Amino acid sequence: MEMLLFGVWALLALISSAGATEGPFEVSVWPDQALVKCGESLVVNCSTNCPDPGPSGIETFLKKTQVGRGPQWKEFLLEDVTKNSILQCFFSCAGIQKDRSLGITVYQPPEQVILELLPAWVALDEVFTVKCHVPRVAPLENLTLTLLQGNHELHRKTFMSLAVASQRAEVTIIAKAQREDHRCNFSCHAELDLRSHGGGLFHSSSASKLLQTFEFSQHPKIWVSPVMEAETAETVSCGMARVFPAKELMFQIFLGDQELSPFLSWEGDTAWANATVRAMETGDHELSCRVSLGPMEQKTRELVHVYSFPPPVLEIELHPLAGTDINVTCAGHVLTSPSPTLRLQGAPHLPAPGEPAWLSLTTREEDDGRNFSCEASLEVQGQRLIKTTTAQLHVLYKPRLEESGCPGNQTWMEGMEQTLACVPKGNPTPSLVCTWNGVIFDLQMPQKATQNHTGTYSCTATNQLGSASKDIALTVEELNEDIISIVVILIAALGIGTFTLALYFNYLPCKTERRKSPYRQTEENQEEGSQFAVQAETCNAHDMTVI
Image (cartoon, rainbow, N blue to C red; front, side, top):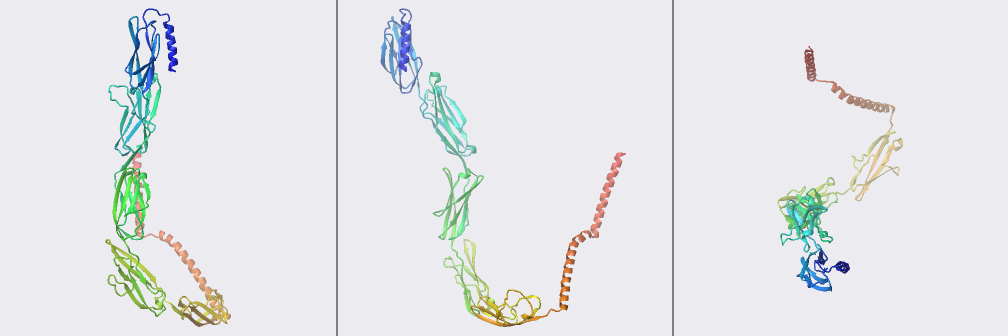
């Protein structure tokens, strides 16, 4: 393309110089405005309209090579152009020398734009620095650097003055971190505008950098009981207040070397973690909580004493026969250390430390259902701990049909719904079967009494230990008219009495409201009198105003 342009220019030069035989001559240089990328080459053509030019050439510190010539022109190749320079093209004609200057501008597009964000994590209200620089770009006076926060322009810098030789293609701002800056992207945009030199417009941008703002000034706190029972699940908590952003907080909780699995929660600027711990070994252990936010970390620890205290052992024969001699023993569990203090309910004496508590008794029927409790107390780190084991005694004995629960003589009233009254005693609970005239009598279903029910019933109670039998004489009495009348009168009287009481209790609150004490009546009269007096005064005042 350059060679084509040169050919056109040379042709025009020859045409214009064809008629020039004498007089002033001109020197021309092509291109008239040179813009070359750093390190590349440039072809320069010098020409004149002198018909018979003398000595000619170019003067430059650049590496040059003549690549073509004609009667009135010469062409040179300038290689590895890295600096701005001014080239002189000269011709002599009839002993007179003229020259023409060509300014060469070297440009370097902003291919690499570097953004520095320091620090990447910054505490709230602390300053951070955003710096952008372009390592290689030229010409600097045509460069514009723009710092961006997201799509928002923070700062724009141009480089119009080259008074300072050491001026670098960089821009820096310092800002104070705010909450709204958290997780914001910062970037830098470089623009090299060479349109005034006959070139184009070059753009380049840096990679984005993420800013993390935080508040992390408080120490975490641990909530845990100072004593913990071995092999028992306990909940521990670790939390931190005045932290931002709370949801990005990370928790690690350890019991000794055992790392727990925390469940995290947040509310406002507070975050906490709950974990379940199950200590397996007794003794003193360190519970630690490590809280981190980005590169920051805080740690706290608490000492926890792990003890072993299984429930005490209560030894008792739970199902003895009545009249059996039994021993009841209350002892500490073998894993309890140190030995606990023991107390057995009903024991005559407290045992010596480390010794079991016990008592002996001969079981009676009255002992059936009796409860025994074995209490162990242990002092751990100044705390008194108590555990109790209970057991219920079940005394076994044969069935009995006692007169109190199964009367031998019973009377039914004819026409009334009746059941045979017989409740046996015994443990286990005995089953009861009663027969009448060789037929099993239904003890659950009420019977309408008739004269046919009169007779003797044979009842037998049975459990695993034996049986007991008893005859019950049942008599059915006739219900005469006098008795029926009395029963009807009693029922009617009962109904009337119930109705009267209901009316009375309904009427009582109203009567109480109407009845007022003389003192209260006097107060009300006085109040009404005062109100009347006030009204009278008001009326008088009104009358006076009218007058």
